[in-house]
Length: 181
Image 1 (cartoon, rainbow, N blue to C red):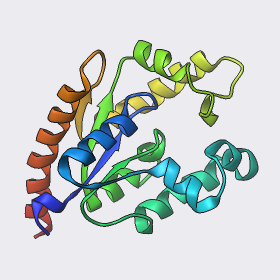
Image 2 (image 1 turned 180 degrees about the vertical axis):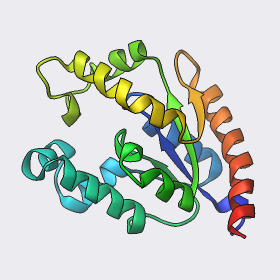
Image 3 (image 1 turned 90 degrees about the horizontal axis):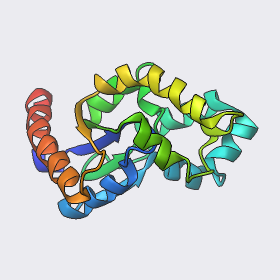
Image 4 (image 1 turned 90 degrees about the vertical axis):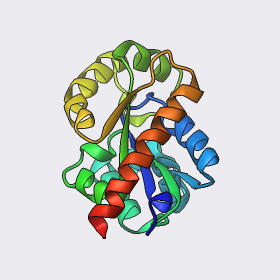
């Protein structure tokens, strides 16, 4: 495998820009782009909230693992991972065995502003969504920060974020190929 073919996995909390940045990076690289949540929705014929309601979070997490193991191309793809994917046991190691992992990060205030506009996030269907975000953020932040290169998305132009992600991917893809070879 060439370093120019290594997959890029974008991880991070909901609202950090994984889908938007993923599309932009894939376009610049000439890669395919997948959003793990959208791919699972297409495969199952249900929305994520419907999957959570009917089958529960553990079943959804199993679907995420299946997607990573078999549900996407092994090369030349940018994958925007669902916010909870990387925090599941063993998932970070699985991601790192398949390509480069970059974590997009934003402040809690930015995440609250971005997620308050969306009603399709099943983990925020709670009596107090803001408190739910604060709790999840506190639980997940240490895992995200140890997942790969961390890139802040707060108040930065998309072009700057994309350029930073691409620099990190190029550097880490060379290391990935060296270790795999």
